[in-house]
Image (cartoon, rainbow, N blue to C red):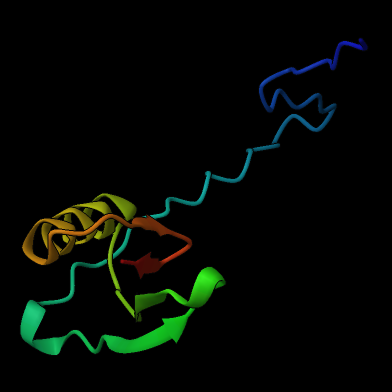
Length: 88
């Protein structure tokens, strides 16, 4: 196996006035629940089963996971949440 050199974003510069660019934060503005527009539809998947798909959530991943958990509990079904999509 090869080892990758990871310098953790360390930058070498000979410019005395060099200032590294600040890292971009992935902060989401929390949109109120009454302003959210979620798209919900039924999809057929393998084996003739059906899955409910919820898409269009605007917010951080933690809130998406919490919404998915609540929906799964209310529907008494399994599912997952990834890439901004909830599949139940």
